[in-house]
Image (cartoon, rainbow, N blue to C red):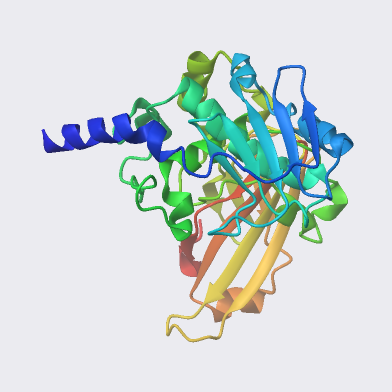
Length: 336
């Protein structure tokens, strides 16, 4: 009963708790009103009306529905946030987005992912207002039961716990499932640039949201907004390991780059390790399996070390979406 009473009190206080820092009282230098009635304000001398119009174009790249008409303001503040180095914040009580460090980030595209994340909060509180409470349907379908989560964001917020707050997890989910996407160049794979440029969930320890089809249906039914089928991307699952190849079950999808990270170890836990990277890209052909050839690995390495830890970095080159899989351990003598 005490837990229920606590959650009820939080619910009553919710609009009040979110009202802090929801407005800015400085002198604005430029303004723009979108066709939907969203007011964009610049509180930075680096941003004029043309820049705000371009920022609006970044905003509407995110998939949206009727909820966009409830967004009231997008403010670009020249300086940093008072208590953190964040680039953005959302305030549900005023349906407003604040973008910080506008004197530093003068290209509207520099706010693309931040704007997508903050709009994800707007989306969440409009269609799924209970997501920030324990035991919500979203928490269960998202597969967060047992995950390290923090439910005290409203009264004990700590930037270091950002990725553990359910509100932030939902906003990151929105970025991956509904947010603006862009293409990456194949040539950037082998320099690793594509993996650095990918859009990934802040919390890589959580289940892969791109393959959670039950969640996709839940979000679609709750919002009326369809998730593009090209967002689906399955985590590779080990299927076979032999002397000449390492195979994984994957999504049958073209233009996805995979980087296999291998670290060879000795049993004595010494610092004597060997690190290797192998690359594969699915181009025009699609297949359910991914095979990494091990022929390029020096046979002496396989005989010198006792076991290998491995994981895969994944990026969809057509959307820039990706993730890093969990690390697994393979004993070298157990192949087959």
